[in-house]
Amino acid sequence: MTELCNTAQDALNILKSGDTLWCHSMAATPYRLLEALAEKALSLQDLTLMQLHLEHADALCAAALDGHLRNRCFFVGKEMRELVNNGRADYVPIFLSEIPRLFRQKVQAVDVALIQVSPPDRHGNCSLGVSVEATRAACDVAKTIIAQINPRMPRTHGDACIPYCDIDYAVEIDSALPEHPPATLNEVHLRIGRHVAELVENGDCLQTGIGAIPDAALHFLQQHDNLGIHTEMFADGILPLIERGVITNRNKVVQRGKLVTGFVLGSNALYDFVDDNTDIAFTDIEEVNNPAVIRKNPQAVSINSAIQIDLSGQVCADSIGSRIYSGFGGQVDFVTGAQLSKGGRSIIALPATAAGGTVSRLVTQLSPGAGVVTSRAQIDHVVTEFGVASLRGCSLRERARALIAIAHPDFQDPLHRQCFEAGLRL
Figure (cartoon, helix red, strand yellow):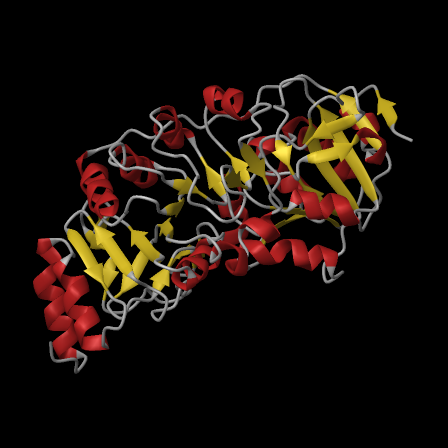
């Protein structure tokens, strides 16, 4: 029986010291509940809040919460970076596809799930809306579910349904969904996007994400035919391709004719597009990101980015040196699935430099403390604004030569010299 509460504070009254909570993430972050949680936590001890990327989570960063609430991040968003790198929050390196199994196999306890849902329909079902990800699994195992019911939350299809009667405590709060406007594309992004698009063939099934590089790649796909989408997330850059009939999902095997995703993050136009759209399946991330599922679609193509790549092809995507920046996410899930797919391939795309052109992202050795997210044996293509390095089947010497060729010209001679000094004759 659902107890309808008057305020967010009332809904959280059942929390007790030592509880482990899961928080609905991305654009579905119930940030009004989190504001109340920051107040409630001060009267408790040793709460743990598990999460992916949260939006509008500033209230959880207060120093006063130390000892009361500790954030446990499976992906580190901008608001949590300082806490993680200062030792005031925890980062768990993990494939996105593995998180639901942590819950379902009881490796990780979930006492309380904090979620944000649409109002119940005439059948008594709410919707997880714009973000299913690992929240579906958390709701399946949580001892208690606390929900913000928001009339602005789109009703989505797939695994997003949650019966109202499964919610233990609910509070009705009308609040805007967090928006991420499309990125502004510069010349570097456009050059990278053009190179990525040249690697995409008609009929491919794409995984892509959010940001300038994915948007630039999508911009150059407008003359392609019969593309499909099976991806952990998508943003506004997909919409023009759907409107033009470029994305049809006809060649897919997994949910043929449907766009499959785990969550979306973008503008209100995007949220309006997914609302009650039966052509889009919001699916449990254990299914979406499972390489055994991804490989079933022919010509699966993963498009991901990186912070740094060494000349053997090792990809660092979650840290800048030893400082944690983001997380594993689904990169390895989709790289693996794409490589196993018939006609599939993986693409890592990144600008050749950082820090205003003063630092090369292609390096002889990863920075001290940098973690390898994707191994050198898994990379098919690396793309910068200076071209494409195709690495599958290449030796270490061949890889170094190909990657130096797409480095910024200012760094090519130093990279050659560093290879020589390391004993690698190119």
